[in-house]
Every structure is written in C-alpha cells, then in structure tokens.
Length: 484
RNA sequence: GGCGAAGUGGCCGAGUGGUCAGGCAGAGGUCUGCAAAACCUUGUACAGCGGUUCGAGUCCGCUCUUCGCCUCCA
Image (cartoon, chains in turn cyan, yellow):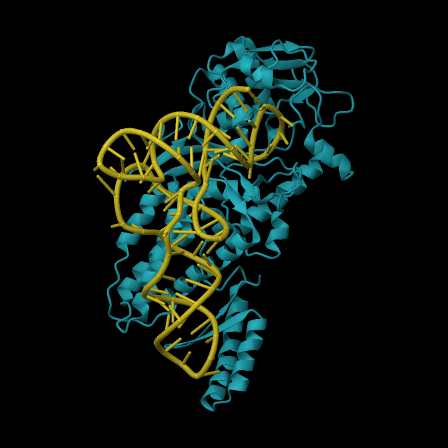
C-alpha cells in the first residue's frame, strides 16, 4: 500500500517518494515565541506530529526539524514595523531573550501535554545568523540580491517562477492589491528583505558584511532547512496562511541560491476557526491552550483536532469539544475492556480494521476516517465481548496490540500505559487501586444486604471525586474519569 | 481588485458517479435493585438553478453565501 500526500505545489495527491531510500527529511515552520500557544498551534503541530508518527510507523527514518523563531518577524513587511518579540519584551519590561526563552518553554509544555513528539532538531533563528548571512552572500554573488543602504533585498524578477506555490505569479496584479505605497529602497515593491539595517535603539542585531542589522523574516527557514536537511528536502509543512508570501519567498531564495528544487512535497494545514472566523493572536479571539487545558483534557483536544482533516478548517465550539470528550471516553472504555476482559473462546479478526485504518492514513493522512475505523472497531469488540463466547486470549492480544499501535502510537489519543492514567504516577495509582478494593468490597456487602441507600451513597461520593463505578456482568469496574 | 478554499441531517465531520461514513445529541428497547456503560432499533442531509449521464453531495456552468491569503500569524 503506498502513501499519497496532497502536494500544495501541484495541488494534487501524489504518490510519496523520498529523495533518499527510507529516509524522510521534513521541516515544519515552528512558532514565533512571543506569546502562549493557542488552539491554532495545536492543530498545526498535532497534524504534523501524526504525519511524522505515521511515516515512522511505515518504516521511514524521519529527520524532523522544527524551528523556533525568536527574532525578526516584523509587525509588517514594509520598512516600518516592529519586531514582535522586542515589542513583547518592552511590554513585559524585560529583554527579548527572556521573552523568547519563556515562551519557548511554554510552547513545549503545551505540546508535551498534547503528546506532540519533539522534533529531532529545534533550531533557533538567532543561533543561525552566520548561516543566514552566508545564504544572503550567495544570493548577492549570484545576482539575485542587492544591497542598498545596509539593507539587502531579494530581486524577485531574477527568479523565474516566483509565486508558483500560491498562484500569485503576476506581480503586476499583486501591486494593485497593495494598500499603501511605502517608501523603500527596493527596486520593485515585490522584492523582499533578506537583511535589514538596525536602527540605533534596535535590541536584536548582529554584525554583517552590510553593517549592523538583523535577518529578514523568510530567511531562517531556508538557511536552517539547508543546514540540517540538505538543499532539497522531502516535506515542508506549515500553516496555509504562510503560503504567501513566506513559503513563496523561501522557494525563491533557496532555489535561486542552489539551483535545485527546494521542497518535493509542500504540506499546508488549515485554520482553526471560532464561530467561522479565523483564530489568531492579532484578532484577539484565540483560545489559549493553557486556559483550555484547565477545563479540557489535552488528549480530548488532540482527538478533537484529529476528527477533522488537516486540510479542512476546524470550527471550535464548546459543544464540539463536549462531543469529543464523550467520544474519546468511549474509545478509552473499549481499550480498558479489552485489557481487562476474561478470556473467552470467540475469534475476533482485527485485520479488516487494521487494513482500513492503514488505508485511511495512507490517503493523505485521513485521520477522521482512521478515527471512524476505531469507533467501528470499538462497537465490534463490545458486541463480541457482550456475547457469551467472549474473545479468546489470542484475539484479545491482537486487538490490544492494534489499539496500542493505532490509538497510541499513530494517533496518540489513547494512553499506552493505562487508560486511567492521565499522567499520575504508578505508585499513587497502585495505592488508589487498593483503596478502591476496600470501598467496592463494602459497597458489595451493602448491595447484598439490599442497603441500596448506602451503596448508592458510595457510588455517588466516588463520582463526585471523579471515579465512576459500573456494575457489569463480570463484576464491578471502576475508572478514574478525566477531571474536567 | 488578484490568488485560493468551502457550503452535507439538531451539532461536529468524512465522502473526486452506482449498498453504509463516523461521532455527539434526541427517541424507543435489551440488561440492571436503580444508575452508568455496552448493545439493538430509529434520521426522505447534501446552498439554489440549469446541464452532462442509464445514474450526481460526487462532473460542468451560472447564482447566492461564507472563509483564508494578498500586512505579523499555525
């Protein structure tokens, strides 16, 4: 079964083939660290996390690079504008480096809770100034870039095919869309900055052949991607809003410098909307992850994200999150039942489900269908377990293995160690188990004596404490619900 | 204005021509001391109007609406 990936460049699904056998070089645009991560970040990085996980499950060795942007992106692309990190630093009355470090840590905290695996390399833009300068020099030497008054610009006209990713190939048409004419040293207004001269008071600046300044905002990705993955890479991912100008500029500056195709597969994930409107920091409607985690299990968020396709918009609402909470709970219950069930004799064939799951993932990472397969499996397993024959130990192991592989390893929504866990340490869980045995024993005695007032009281008090009791045919089972 | 997406049942959300997505919510039922869970049953959905076709959410055209990008943005 081959993997097909939708390539934004060709706008079709293409059979995925790597540059080098069995190795995937993958670069994903990372966050600009000047604020806490929001749901949009979650969608992006969860989506690409699943891509990486599935590629690895498929046998590839994935070298995954995701940058941390800790400098440079201006609040606008004209010659005016402020560096967002510096702006935040002055707001918080501290220096830019502290801002960058603080929000980098915050970002990883949130991603860890979402079970997003760390990239192999997470290069920071400020740690790669020499590489960026070297790339600019290459472009100046080859005539693709020019220096004016300490600024260096990329000459868009010198690169045939500028705008091929976004479809914005007609630069004249582009001009008409520009709202204000900006005074600039650029030869053409579509030229973009590779290096900017720093003003006196500018806090983040470096020495360069063109004087003291700082890198332009498209440059770091090209420089770092080339450094760690080579001049041509297999996959470059990012948010759709970055297609233009960011990714088109990356293509231009990279391909002009190397003469080689920069990226084989461009992958773009879609936006999170809230009431149909894009969620964004500048729009002040973003849902902060740390706040969200206060009331919602992070894995529910992950599950919610994976219930839609990465190329579709995802509309956030409390009712949608609630539906996901219930849905994920159902899958967790099934996993728990499979683990704890008593051996039966029935044969349960997992293969059709595993095949359909793989088929969905191989079709451009269609996680909504993959999730649907898990739900169908859940129903089939529950039906089989409800049947007097039950499921044989061998079949049970197969099912458990598949749930582990699909639900935990690939999608990362089911907890591999225990479905009650949610991160508590094992020692406490063990003690809790012992306490529960005592309580359940007392409750059973009460039930035997038809003292239902007492047995219900135990059940209700436990529920208040976040522990749910179920009286099944096989006895009493309990589970610690998500405390949300 | 230019470039690009999209409109699916109460809600979320798949589906590139011919049985069925799936989840949540709702209704009825089985089981249970009662719950919960699980299972069973239950929904004339595809923005509108034309067209192609034996057959169209699925292809084509037009109309309406929404959203993204063209300024930092996952």
